[in-house]
Length: 379
Image 1 (tube, rainbow, N blue to C red):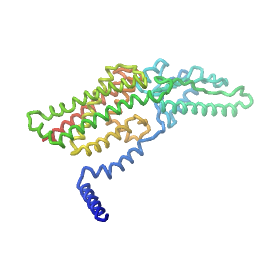
Image 2 (cartoon, rainbow, N blue to C red):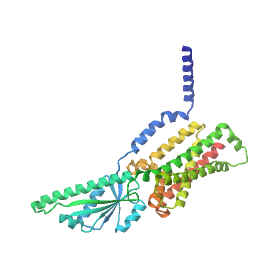
Image 3 (cartoon, one colour):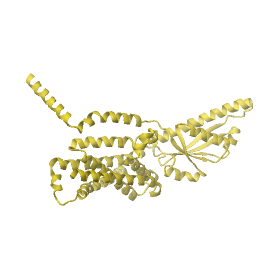
Image 4 (cartoon, rainbow, N blue to C red):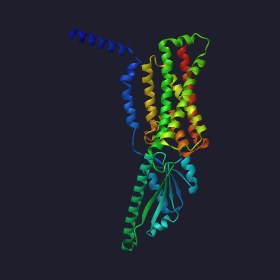
């Protein structure tokens, strides 16, 4: 028994020595968990703040302007734009300029001074059910607080002469997701995460596997150019990724029934663009990894921030400003907005241009770096 324990102890010592010599594995075991904890501790928040609001003030009175100033002064709302008419609400919600449109009706000040109830129309982007529900609660509370201040004002200045108590109520409508079903928000986002994650890991493992078994050296001595080898390795996975997009769409149609209101051609084209960026990331991972285990750990280090900082689960507006800058380097951030816009809003290229251009630029940049690193590694 003691002899057996001696052998176990020697084996443990051998593993510890081997681990100490593995300079690429040590950071992932001891440094990366702490960095991720710090990163996610600052970035992850279920609070909903800085909601973008578009104001349509049809009254243009002192009272309505005061309400707008008080709304913008709140930490929960940012006044993003002013609308001249209610007809502009469609475009504002479609292109994401604002997620809330508040319509202050004509005669608001007159009715409040007369003690009559005033209805304020609120249009909310319901594609994110959680944020929409919280925003509705915030606006309802804001209306109640403003009504309480008006009531106190009337009591002080009019006393018993006040004929009735003025009140502000909100009439809320949820666009794109009237029932606030969570699947409407989660299914398109899950599609983005799944196809991106599978493409990155598949490319990284495929190339590292070639290096482990020694077949990549056999390819290097052939007349094939490095860029030809890279394309030959990645194009099949691009096809697999587009096939996965089709399977996800079929599963959604059969099970979740999230409506696809936009162009399916635009969806496939943007998916191909995003897949190329994911494949390029996998290629980068393969250039810094010697084994499949290292490739998985390296890919995980990239995929976790990409997942949590992209806006899939937690609003980017709630993150610290430096982390919001970091999210601009994540292709998934832009692809999420594109897919949800096509699925839920039915928007086209014009409305998604501000997301497509950054995604295309990031894809090109990542691919160029991947080609350079891959060529250097082969040399």
